[in-house]
Image 1: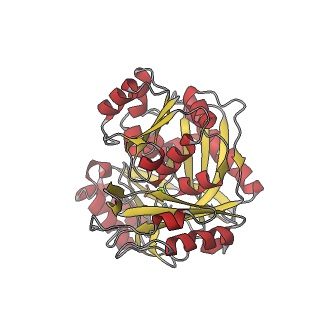
Image 2 (image 1 turned 90 degrees about the vertical axis):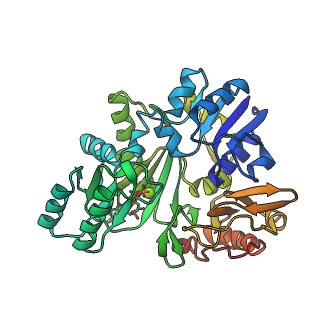
Length: 421
Ligand SMILES: Nc1ncnc2c1ncn2[C@@H]1O[C@H](COP(=O)(O)OP(=O)(O)O)[C@@H](O)[C@H]1O
Ligand SMILES: [Mg+2]
């Protein structure tokens, strides 16, 4: 079977790499991919947002499965379009993707189904929102309703900062129409973890908990990014907590979506804060996390096709996952200037030396091949990943690989996994 992976980051490299090793997969295509995916698959020069061209390519190449990486095409209805064209697709329908595409929808959904989350209100009127915040007289969290590439949330430290966030999102439209509505919610405190569960609408196959590091610099300082590294498993998640997440969050979410006529198929990636040890949902994502996918794929053994195809076909019956490594950790290497504007075209050296180290896989994100050279072409460039017997072991291996790579001006964190080291 041919499989098409949509997207061009480390997440898609990790998925394409796993799929390429499936005995039932004859060819992997990636649209648009990067220099890393080109080593395990065939890149197609189609943007992840070009829905018509993706549907055409899936039919032309007679692919038996499409796996959609990023959220924007899911929210825009790529899965609906592919299924209408008869192509089995891993990912939720546009209607189910509202769990990520509208934070207001997600909060109201959680309220309807008794799923634990922060207290909130939704506003489209700045004056009404500001009046509520003044009345509460507490700093709040302000979230643009729609997709904002991870930049639409302000965790305010003061009432004034809360009011300023309302102004910039609702009035100045900093995130365009994604900020036509906002969720204003209570600030929670506690460690953050994420949990990935593959779903077929009814059944679930839980993957593993992971922890991402959003801030640019060591010690969780500096600006927010798309994610500077991740590891799995986080030490604060034990079997009892995993059960609680499944029973109190995942199962009611699936039942609720099915009951509302939008059964969820694909991967549900729940962002959680542990408040007094109890899970509360910060957000839903309706696709694999990046960089979390790199550590999940590194830990996973065996054929991934039955998992993705089972979810796409609505039948995960009998599908199980096998964890080959007790732990994995990945370190993102980013360009100079990230998360702001970045220079393009700088050569990356040492990739082969790093990849030859035991347990290491170097997943590419913003890279391109130029003749013999691999050059940086984006903010996040590489996601250097290692399996290990424990998180400290995986960290030692991943950092040895990072140290083998050179890219002028590159930035990375030295403390990924600090809560487990
Ligand atoms: N209610 C909350 N209390 C405290 N921090 C929060 C809250 N909601 C979100 N955050 C912080 O803001 C970050 C981004 O919020 P999230 O809802 O995950 O949106 P997105 O990933 O779409 O930007 C979270 O990872 C978390 O650190
Ligand atoms: Mg988030």
